[in-house]
Length: 328
Image (cartoon, rainbow, N blue to C red; front, side, top):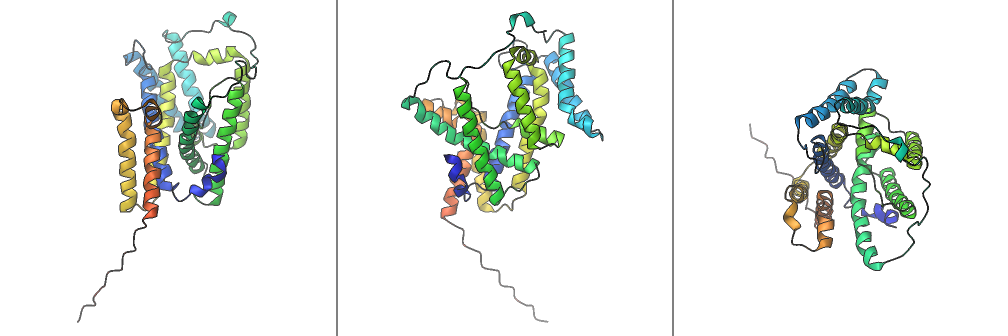
C-alpha cells in the first residue's frame, strides 16, 4: 500500500535524504564486514592473526582481479576471491567438508506449515517496522539506480522506487506463506553491480532461479555454510564500502547550502551516535529500541523529519548585493 503513494513524498525524499541513508547503510555494514573478518560475533578466536590474514587474502584477491583489463577476470573477482579463501581455509583447518550423508536430498517447502493466524498485537509493531524498512529500501534502490546509470530524480526514478517497495511487500508475503521471515532489499548487491559492471535484470532472474534450486536441495546450502566468516568478511567489506561511497557521491553531487548541511549533520550525528553508543536507548521501551536502535532507521527518520520541517519554512531568497560602480 505504501508503494502506491510513496511518490507523493518527493518533497522529503530528496537526493540529500537518500544519500544520507545510503551512506549510513554502508558505514553500518562495514562494521559487519570487519567483524566477520575478525571471526564473527562470539568467535573464540576473534581477532586472531589467522582470521585477519584469511580475510586480507580474499580482499587482496578481489582488488587485484579488479585491476585487470580483462572484463571476465573482473566479473569473476568476487567468486574467485571467495573460492581462494575457502580453499586456503580448508587447507589450514578453518573450514570443514560437508557430511553429505546427514543432509536430506530434497526439501519441498509446505505453505503455512505451522498454521495461519492473525494477531493485532503483533501486526501493529511489525507494520510500523515495515514502514521504516521502506526508508532503507529507498536508499538501496537509489544506489541501484546510480550504479545502473539511471537517473536518481524525476518520474522514472520515482516509478522505480514505487516498484521496488511494492516488490518488497510481495516478496515478504511469499516468504510468510512459505514459513520464513520477511525480507527486504540487500545493500550488498549494489556493491556487486559496481564491482562487476553488470546491472541487467535478466541476470537477476537467473540468480533467482539458482537461489530457488539451492533452497530445494539442502546439501547445496550446507556447502555454502562451510565458508568461514573471515572469507565472507573479506568479500563483503569491499561491497559495503562501495555502498557508503555511493551515498557520499550522491550527497557530493548536490549544492550544499546551510539547511542541507544542517540536515546532514543532525542525521549522521543521531544515526552514527546510535551505532557508536549502543546503550543509548537502553532505558527506552522495547518498541523504541527496535525502531530507533538501528543507525539506518535513526538517520533516515532524522533526515526525513528535517526535510519535512524545512519544506514548511522555505528560506527567503537573498536580495542581490548592490555593486557600486567606482568613479574614475
